[in-house]
Amino acid sequence: MTDERYIRLMNSEIDGQNTPDESRELERYLDAHPDARRCFEELCDLGRVFSDVPQLDPPPGLTDAIYAETTGRENRRARRDLFAAVREALRPQPQLRPAYAFVAGLLVGLGLLCVVSVTVLRGGPEGAYRPYGTMVAEKGELLNSQCVPLELPELFGGVCFEHTTNSVDVHLGLSAESEVEIVFEYDDEVSFEGYTALDDGRHSLSVNPNMMQLTHSGDCDYNLHFRDGRKTGSVIRMKILAADDVVFDEAILPEGGGGS
Amino acid sequence: MLDDSKLVSRAIGGDQRAFEAIVQRYERTVFNVAYRVVKDQDDAADITQSVFIKVYRKLGSYDPRYRFFSWIYRITVNESINHLKRTKRRAEVDCGPEARGRGTPWESLAQTEKSDFLQNALMVLKLDYRVVIVLKYFLELSYREISEIAGIPEKTVKSRLFTGRQLLRDILVRQGYAR
Image (tube, one colour):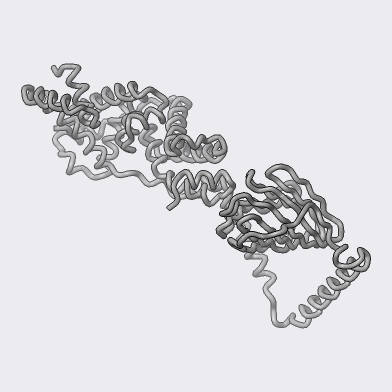
């Protein structure tokens, strides 16, 4: 029967833990005890047995199931499919061209009327803006600029992010019949500095550490300014909530490409 | 390719693509470790899903002083052990490979037979030994890494590994696969 000490030395040898002296001592012992050598070789063979066994593939669908429970990618995919269907349904049809022209003309006219009204009522373009906080005095070097169209059932418009070496500027154009919450989340390197808005007054703002929330309804363009202490740019997460449901959720990366 | 720490900090910052990259990087290994501990592919898939949900929810509490893989494998081992405790499943050992094994050289077995055979042998081991053997042989981790993951001192890792290895060798010899 192999001595307890040599069993320990055999295991340590396999794991590469023996000192040179211990290895030599074990070798002498194995030379003198063929049964022990056989046992040692069998223990060494275990490594070969394990390396012969291939890794199993996870079942198909597991990755999607994980994403659905965590990042919600399936939901976003479903939403994109819905938008695609809506876009397809609204695809312009040549026979309706005169009707499109009429509607477009009407919208442009109404838009101009609104701008003129706001300008007159608030005493010129300066008064049409509602400044909050401070806007950037000197922008850093541009890192990246990216735009995301917002084509949701609850909201229509778009958002553009401009990451520079000291700021993130967000330009929002929104059109929503009912009230929606636009939430921006960010880490400690980022702080909300100020904004301007051209609107009909139907919006409000709530600013907390690491989060800025804009409550909006109607049509409005906003310019939001965040200071960014990270020279390489920071991730800003943008969520849109309608009736307490999250209808949009993207992490905007400084190097481009909306994180999902 | 981004290293774990960069992916993790991006994921903590809200970059969901970074989290998905973590899933892609570890899903297969987590699934295999879980399977080697519980011996059921459906259960291993459930465990894998639970592991990543936990990782996603607790990412903010991850301490970057420790290696990320230690953390995720620790969650995997704990989830697998808890799963076995919940289901109170006995080690189900199929005697088939033993009968087939006698006199059949290891090399001549098909890959699936090798896998089944080894899995049956692993299931004979006590859970404590099985976990250490799986971490050592399938993930090729050091004593220290196994100690971090299993939450036991290195000395205990060593003794469990030695005993587990000895027992496994005995099983293989009995079934005719070791020389």
